[in-house]
Amino acid sequence: MKISTRTFPCVSRTQPCKRRFILRRCLVFDFDGTIADTLGEGLIIYNELAEKNGYNLINPDQLDNLRELDTNGLLKHLGVPKRKLPFHLATAMRRLRSRIEKLSLIEGVQDVLPLLRERSEQMGILSSNIPENIENFLEVHGIRDEFSFVSSIGKLSGKARHLRSIARTFSLAPGEIIYVGDEIRDLRAARKAKVEVIAVTWGLNSRRSLSRENPTFLIDQPSELLDIV
Image 1 (cartoon, rainbow, N blue to C red):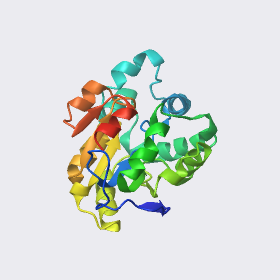
Image 2 (cartoon, helix red, strand yellow; image 1 turned 45 degrees about the vertical axis):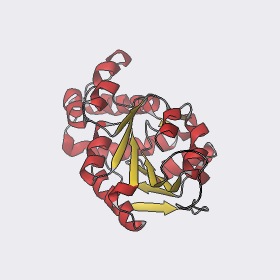
Image 3 (cartoon, rainbow, N blue to C red; image 1 turned 180 degrees about the vertical axis):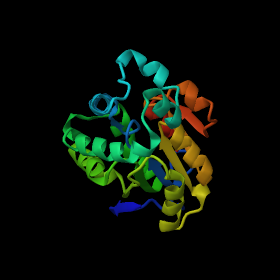
Image 4 (cartoon, helix red, strand yellow; image 1 turned 90 degrees about the vertical axis):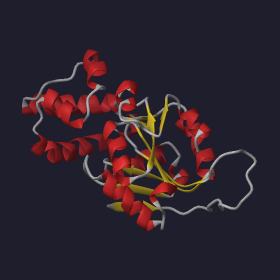
């Protein structure tokens, strides 16, 4: 796992707080669909690869149905062999690199990040995207200093193991971490790692599909993070 860190003054757990919230020792965000609105560009890139490799194309009117599927279901529907996924993912990340400046922040995220950082000793990102894309996006939008670390796993699976690695890196118990993600696989990884998870409905998977995974919390707007953290 690649972890790039940046330090900032941490809030002490014993520091008096004016608000009634629980200070989280570590708040970890997914990137694509949770912080960055990558769906539009991701769809364009997928269709470029699908046309070249003979996979099923995605039309915008299919998105509501596709948002109900987990990763395996989506690959089956699209006709993408699972064994070729690492290669295609790497290609997609390289293509996304040249489009970073086209990507928008999820509306409302920038407003809550400073407050969330104050309520966490560590706040970082754990993503399947590559470090260069994440770092460039954060710099473009002026929010790199809000995060104390960026962790990239470079593939779609393995987030549970990397959540445990983050716990070891910062000497945390699993219960001292909370993960924020928009996909079914994020929720399953958090459950496997025994960490709490906030499922957000503004990303890839639908509210209904996320709810079926019984996340610790389920929210529809970034401002709702302030009611939890």
